[in-house]
Amino acid sequence: QSAPTQPASVSGSPGQSITISCTGTYRDVGGYKYVSWYQQHPGKAPKLMIYDVSNRPSGVSNRFSGSKSGNTASLSISGLQADDEADYYCSSFTSSSTLVVFGVGTKLTVL
Amino acid sequence: EVQLVQSGAEVKKPGESLRISCQGSGYDFTTYWITWVRQMPGKGLEWMGRIDSTDSYTNYSPSFQGHVTISIDKSITTAYLQWSSLKASDTAMYYCATLTRGSYGSDYWGQGTLVTVSS
Image 1 (cartoon, rainbow over the protein chains, first blue to last red):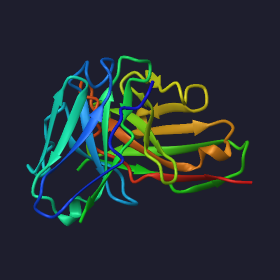
Image 2 (cartoon, chains in turn green, orange):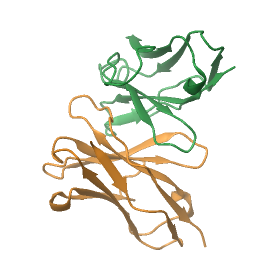
Image 3 (tube, each protein chain N blue to C red):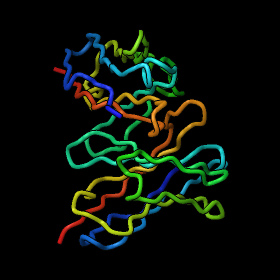
Image 4 (cartoon, chains in turn cyan, red):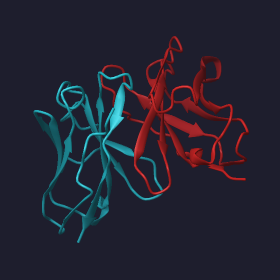
C-alpha cells in the first residue's frame, strides 16, 4: 500500500489562497468519499479540518474547503493567516488490508 | 467534552516490552473506534491500526501487523498499544484518536506518548 502523494511544500502570502493536492489510486482516494484532512502544528497533535472530502467539523473556519476529482483530493485555504502555517496531511479509507492510509504530508509556509 | 488522555513518555531498551494507554472520557466509549498513529521523529503520520470499541475487532496496517497489539478495556474506557519486544526503530510519538464509523476521520486526538528505545 503506497501513501497518497502530496507536494512536499507550498507557500503563500497572508490573504492569498493556496491548494494542497493528495493523489492516490482507485483503491483509496479515487474510489471512496472518505477523504479527511488534518492540520498539525509543531509539537502538537493533528487536528481534523475536513472529513468526507468536503465537510468541515464544527469550529473549523470556512476558509478551509475540500474537493475531489478522480484520484486527486484537494484542500484549499483562502485568506491565508500566519497561524495556518503547519503540516497538512490527507487520509483516505482504502480497500487494501490497511483500512486507512495517510498522505505523505505537505508543509505550508505563510511568507 | 470528549477527551483522550494518553500515558506518559517511556524510555525502554531494545527487546523490552511496553504497553501504553489511552483513556477516553466525555462520550459514550462505544460511539467511536479507537485508532493508533505513529509519527517518527521529523516524519509524517502512519496509520497503525484500529479497534472496534464495541466488540474489540481489530484491523492492522501490514506494516505493523505482528509487531504491535491493540486492545481495549471497555470497563475503564481505555485502549492500549503494546509491544512484546521493542526495537530502536520503534522510537516515535504515538497518538491515539477516535475513528468515526463510516467516515474514517479522526475528530479527537490524544496528546501523544513519546516512546524512546535505546540501549
